[in-house]
Image (cartoon, rainbow, N blue to C red; front, top):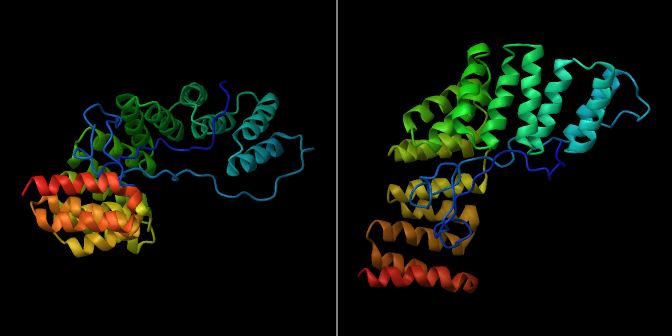
Length: 316
């Protein structure tokens, strides 16, 4: 096994640019699909970086526990605390006593998945399927591992197999939505996200991603409603406010967009991003005024806002 990495849990992709919450210059980046290179292709955040973050566990059992169940309980507790090395060690001890226990091997696969070792996770989930064929959770695990490794076609194959054997696996539908999203197949992404929402309507990250697919397909009003629903549901992350701001700019509702951007990243960000929205729709004078305000509010963002201001003045 490779050494465990830091507790970064899901494959996370952030899109940034001159209109993002950091007001940085638009970089050339890979977005899981070589066609996605720039803010103009996908102008916001889609994926939830904390979706699988371990939750605080209960008090750990004493280290003297020796039975399979007790070692498993120790592994579960360490995994819940994000201690992947110790979780793996406890499951390994349990497997020494019960070497062909598919549940324990599956949990080892989840440890490797959450520790961002997808190749090791793939090997373990395949081992589970050898012991227990057609186990939907192991197929979903394979899908997630291949998604992390950016093997999107293989990931989609396993997610489709998983929901065939267990139609209630909401995360498989969510991942399928993300894969369709990356391939710009927005109708398929919207369908997958809506299916996931029928199973888990409380998941704000699904609403956020659904909103992005709706925006990508040109359904901006519907996207605004979905982002607002995510906020009503308590999923009030900066990414949602940022995405809502861009959708509102698309509808030329600039005052509301300014408020959303302000909640996402502060007043200087709000002035800059709203200025970008105004400039995109040809409102050069208003855009220039917003860029000047951005410079006044935060001189450390002078370069980006000043460059945006020069673009607005040049286009007059």
